[in-house]
Amino acid sequence: MPLFYKKNINENTKVAIWKIEEPESFFLAKVPLQREITHPHKRLQHLAGRYLLPFLFTDFPYREIEIAATRKPFLPNEQYHFSISHCNDYAAAIVSRDWRVGVDVEFITARLEKIKQKFLHPDELNFVHSQLPGQQLQLLSLLWSAKEAIYKWYGAGAVNFSEMMRTFPFQLMQEGVIESVFIKHDFKHQLILHYKLMEELTFVWVGSDNK
Image (cartoon, rainbow, N blue to C red; front, side):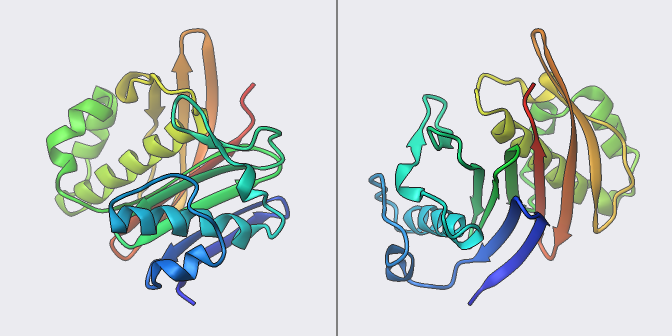
């Protein structure tokens, strides 16, 4: 069973990463394909992400999932909050009874160098450029994952990544936390992001109420 990573954050919140090595039939035996996806690998990613939901909590009512206008999947009664991410042959999910959540898993990739001004505030760019050259690409990927996780936590779309999501300097380690703030109009919320660097991946999750 290619469970790549699993963490019980507390008794009501769990997160996991699955390395996809199984055929589509493996996932279809556990969860249905609830929307048409023509690309075979994207369909496999979608199924693996959905598979993780009842894997984390066996009573997760995955057949009740709906899609908001912002494309965020949700449960109408909010019995569980959840978030899904996938890249290449990996799928990740976080599920919580207590908190609104967001998760992101990414490959460390040089393409982020070309778009870093679009998702990083000037203060964040200065922080990246202050690091050793060998750490800058890893840090870029981590901050991209952090903002994707915040975006999924917020869930209502229409977000400026560089201005509305701000992260603050931290010591880059294999595992740690990032302090951040989300600001949109009169809504402001402090967030603590948890991250882990694994092989060629960056992995970030966040869980918090939205008040």
